[in-house]
Amino acid sequence: MSKNNFNKQDNTAKLKLLSLVSHEIRTPLHGIIGLTEQLQDTPLSDDQKSLVDHLIHTERILMNLINDVLDYSKLKSAAFDIKLKPASVHTILDELKTLFAPLAAQKSLDLEVNIEVGAEYVLVDNLRLKQVLSNLINNALKFTDSGYIRLECKQTTSTNSDGHPMFRFTVEDSGSGIPEGKETSIFEAYGHSSESHNKNGTGLGLAISNMILNNLGSELHLSKPSASDTGAIFYFDLAMEPTETAPHTKKEQLTHQFEGTRALLVDDDPLVQKITTAMLEKEGISVKTSLSFKSALDCLSQVQPELIFIDLVLGETDGAELLGYLKESGIHSASFICMTASENSKDEILKLGFDAVLRKPFNRRALTRVLSQLSK
Image 1 (cartoon, rainbow, N blue to C red):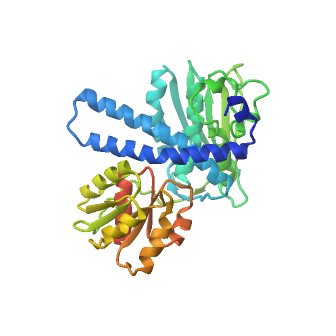
Image 2 (image 1 turned 45 degrees about the horizontal axis):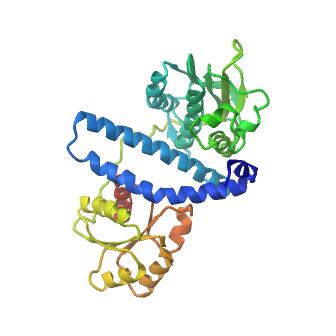
Image 3 (image 1 turned 90 degrees about the vertical axis):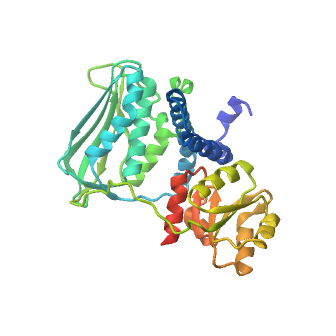
């Protein structure tokens, strides 16, 4: 398909195509991430450690691009939940500064943070707020070659209908600004400005940010710095309820009861088998692998595993079909874990009869978290 023909398609067709490609990329990316984790666990020189760190950073960029497409799909289909938890505005903005400071330093940009809030803790979807601000900072970094980027949050005197105070979040830059006539279209899916076609990205960042904010009762606005003809100011007002409850900052210690047990791993991708087997063996679990429905049944005639991992798509076979057959056969003592790159919601997959869901690509900690949840 030529670029011109692609651009003429409606956004629904574009999204369907990109979403399909994104899913296809997830499985090999699972292998790349898993192999990188294994490489990290080996003796490395300082130069090799640096190369691995850069590899991990690149993997995260690729994963973010894929998630942009999948997030947009979920938001359009309303498969999107807001999770309000205690958080500190100071901590959120400080973490973003720590994350983006090295990238700003590479371009000799000043990354400024200004916080003027009275509430120590507020109830907010921390991850989604960070996602919106990260998208805005990423855009500012792309289009600013000199000067500054300013991240700001100020508690205003306004309140919403529930009496919760309003907070204004702002990302300002001294970059090239938004071309005249593009002030509205940049908020649309694939709505690149003319200059942004030369930058990395899906063209979904601002659309996703606006959709997240709409779910939070807000929206993005655009203005220009008053003292300059260039640059851009993106801002939004968000109502957040103050709370005296402090957020949980200590990383959860994950434990499980499956050390010394057996697992059957059913996946038609040999690389996924190899990576996931290595992860399970590090958790003290012995693994038997199978590539298909039939070979899985052959394996089960030889071993009775406590854990059965099933890919949702097994070549021409549906993983849910294998699950149904095994349950009808009376294998109820095992825990069934679905491994999938699909965009089906967790609830939809659990309704099929699975006990847990692992989304590709997953790392060892994600696997351990599932094992921990199954142990409770």
